[in-house]
Image (cartoon, rainbow, N blue to C red; front, side, top):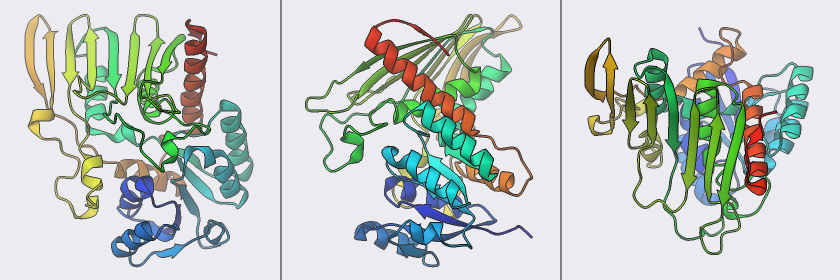
Length: 353
């Protein structure tokens, strides 16, 4: 029988409702004991979906609960450093939403504190469990394209207005598209290829009245490989989500992982058949040369499921697996963001350090 680990979730806005609670409750061994939320509309949804979970209005009600072993933080980026510190000092394991922190100095401090407290610390880099990224990883590792020379990934939206009453549109620490969407793109690239030799960034504010960066191009340079990562808020017609070029062929993939849109309708993975399966029209296209034979066609997408991240965390907590998303990796994502910002300011490549 699985050991039960009781979980406290801080925040039930979009992140808590869409990306965390559905997957915490989909892992055998986790019990969602308490949710901290103050907005009535969010409390109403949480109560209807998780009637056995207590709703509290104060984070201390979770931190002071001796029965809660593991705390998940789904809060604004600017709060991550202080809240992770509080959770660790309270003697609990912690998962924080991405981005980890605003600076590498903050990340290093928290990593050291977690080691001192002998507590698990990880970051919600859920896009490693996207169907399309899992497919890309399979294509890269199989070397179907020969020697990879260029990897391009986009995470684009179209919102040509400033969304009111949201911290994502306000100039706080760790705000803007680089910390938001690019955190995913950077993490995926580092997971595939490791740390780059150099970083280049071009960061812009394109929407009238915007107070945060809303367009970003990041280039990571390796020996023979160039990695291009792009995100923007003014992309009306989306291009390829992934485009990989090798000396034997190419792979192109349109469309985004299907989980987020399904989750926004309050459908839960526990009750949804074929969770995370992409329709065939979203499968990627490959054109390559395998042993002298030209091969062209679709590559069936892998199954996406963010449950995998939480399953790994549970198994790491009970000593059955090594943690997949290590805090040091999340710290390296923040370092790339820092170097990207410096590069954009100085209009030059920056050596990774």
